[in-house]
Amino acid sequence: MPGRNNRDTIINLAIKDLGLSALFTFIGVNLRFFTENTLTALVFFNVIQTDDPASRFDIHSPSPPDMTGDVVTTITFTIAYLFFTTFNVRTALTYTIGDKDTMNNQYTHAIKHLKNCHTWVKNFIIVVLTGYGINFFSKYILSMGLEAAYIENNALSNMMGIISNGIQICYPFIFVYAYCKYVYPNAVIALLLYIFFLVRNLFATGVVGFVGVYDLHVTAPFLDWLTFLIFFYSIGCISMHHSALKLFRKVDFNKNNQ
Image (tube, rainbow, N blue to C red; front, side):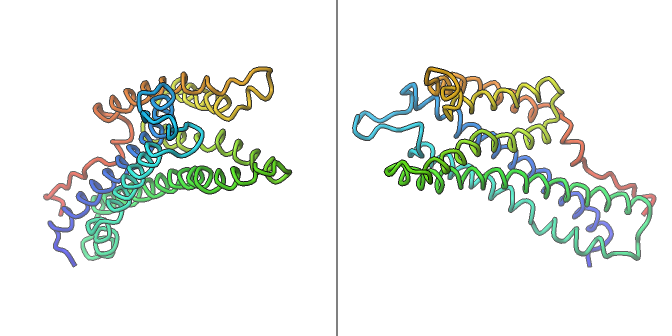
């Protein structure tokens, strides 16, 4: 069982690791926005494109840039999970919580703070990975089955198309929720984020064109340039003191009360 001073250090190191886990998860959310939105615009406007007309990148199906973005995002989420399960976190939750002999009000407050950090990050990761899993299923499993079903253009393909469009429209809201949970934007900015992804995906899935007369799915890549505003806002929130950082504050142990 760690000594008293070492115990206090482990608690603060565990809180720091949990904060890094939340940060990398947030970075992964931004990478998801980049892969799904910004890369679409870059491919559509030939900023990222092959010179061979026979093997040009397509914005409607996974392409090498798109898959590379998914790999980088997956690595980022893996790093976030590794920080969530570090030795410091496991030790702080296992040994220091069981150290009842030196329990006092200050120590009780520190343990409660550690548990709150751990629960917050756990829920944060679960929400993000749920959205990521839904997106992965839609992009790499459902879309491939949809392409095969379209050969016959039967009721199955129509049903799969409806499910795919529904997922594409709704799943980004999970990432927007996670994004807002980390940066705590004001109500106006949060509402604008939800509206942006709703409108963007209504165009991208062709739902607007289905209801109207014209096929307006090409509007989505134009809207995708607005994603850069989200990245700038994210950088500003990470660079400046924002609300989520308060949760992972260091515990200042008063040695006179030990």
